[in-house]
Length: 497
Picture (tube, rainbow, N blue to C red):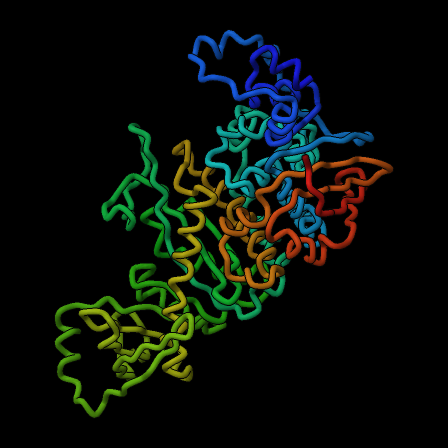
């Protein structure tokens, strides 16, 4: 068939398309080798008119998305095989049950789990926008991930997200705290706002400061809460407004306390995250929640620093990342704030690489000063996580100003991010790598999937780091997937030609 198609002046890409249409997948290298062995030379450069004049197969009408039914068969994918690695995790961590309990909408043909997993599969692939799902809409493997023959089309995905309510997102977030148990044992959290720009000319959204562009823009203000010990994201909210953003910290405390039964131990955020009045509410609460933030500095405050005697300063050497150290001058004292009852601890930092002093404030009077400084320095990790959301999960590309839609997007980004963090922790030497690196080195791969005797054997293509991936505990053993009819899935490392 390859030789016959070349005699009709088909290029190797055209030959592969024709073979795929007949369910006979063959790689470009294999086709090229066949032609070389048969003595065919490369085709001369052709004009556009010559290329379109080739009699290509008729346009394939995409099938309607329906529930996947088991049958003995063999099919393949060029790049999407990596998402199947997450199926055993979804089962073992109880995420499938969490999606069911969240009561997401269903359609007349597809269940709530199938719809949410369809979105999640595109998130795990790092797909730019939901409307770009045409790249994967015919992929059988992504369909299998969602329990479907193929994924729903862009129109279905778009209309579905409008139906999702904040209550379902919030319910899923609460359940995920339990699913990823052990990821939040320290009960310490970094909190930060993210302004997600909206590019519509008629946007009715409020303007928020966008640090990446150094200007205020019409955008969706969202909250991201991260656990610094594990890098897991614990909470998101894309329904914030200017008149409610100061109370976002209290909303998170209520969310966490309701879900875990205990309040967070410490919250770390920047100077403009909330008001001094809310700091006082955290301090006088029944749980006496600890906080760490930066005091807003003014001219008078800086002048007071110059009046502090030299003998009241101490020189400290602070450990930094990658074994580096930084020396700075530190003054630790007690002070007062407006609208704050009692004294507060203030740590002043100078000679730390910034032109003006930094004023750390906390209600934890027992914590070692070095540890206080390191904890706040680690808060920048949440900004790195936000940068990752933008780079891989494309968080700054909302296709609509409908806030509830972006909130659903943000919730699924949290789930996808945490799944990648969970996988990274099982890959020796890659524990601190971001989602983009994990996807590129391990998951962006093809495979041949063989369905036989109630089992799905996934034969992954050869890849440099494949032996590390195959040594992950749930990849080494077969996993039963009840929501896929109870099939057993196992992974092997074979080359696919």
